[in-house]
Length: 467
Image (tube, rainbow, N blue to C red):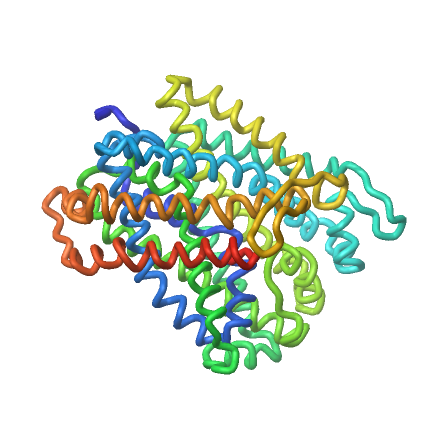
């Protein structure tokens, strides 16, 4: 074991960094729409039950694996006596690499819109869909395409900021940034929540989020809540094992896991109570949506009709920017930490090299949105072999297969190979008492793996993405 391994400088630093990793764009631009479609309060109740029953045991396991092994995501399993699980680490490492390729570019889109609302909100309002298409390299009026150089430059800036923070190290870079970024994210979130809740006509949206619309509760609703909780916590992505390896033995893994999951859930719930009332007050219930199209296109109508909309639009995209930065930084760290330990490379050149490679691959992601007819390949049991746009194929690969497979591997490792007893021994290091040993054992051995298998099966057999 390494005695000079980097460590978090403080408990708060770790919690904010881990929460920053978990809090991503999906919390803000997907959760509200899913909650609306799932019956408002009914969806919230399901979500709040799923997080502690599935999300927390999985995160606790990954953090314990990392701290016990004191190694990167690939080598951790071997250091704990089970080299046969190295495949789990390799999948997680590959997930982090592929996601960073495209997530860093989406971060560039967010940065572009942050600047847009600060400098030219009128142009966004004039034609929200056309503005979005033009950013991605498609002129709807002329029907022509072009390389979207401006947004590629913004993606370059976004990646450069992430790499700069990674180069500064665990305590001096990642921890220091999250100590600023996460409080800023929460402040902006609360300001936007207050603005949304006080809009004329917002009350029906608030009421909807607090009531239970049983007519919208179906088995599909449960699956969506399950997947949102699972994907939201950055599980199966090489992140929590890497971050866990920087934890001192004196830290309470169980309590820290609870705090990280609570913060992540709180951001999602506040986002729901921010977005849904705002849309109800401006566009009406029919205007509620989810995903990138909703965030970049539909919400322009909300900000246009909102008093001071340009300012609050700027704050909204600044919020998204912080969420994208904290998540991307954690992904890159998992990749860099492995290469530093395995190859003996230096942090600075390693970070620059992998950042450049991932950025260049990500250019294909952005350009395949509209500018260039770049295709990928995909297979599922419903549609057979298909050739979706390269950008979609990248997301299908990570979300439908790789993330669930890696998370499943971690659950099987913790629940059946390394055993829950060893996980709990690691959790109880330093005289810390963990009173939920039997419950944790049952959840990590049976409940969590079953839930992940359901997510994986639905994705492969129905041809849909639950993330």
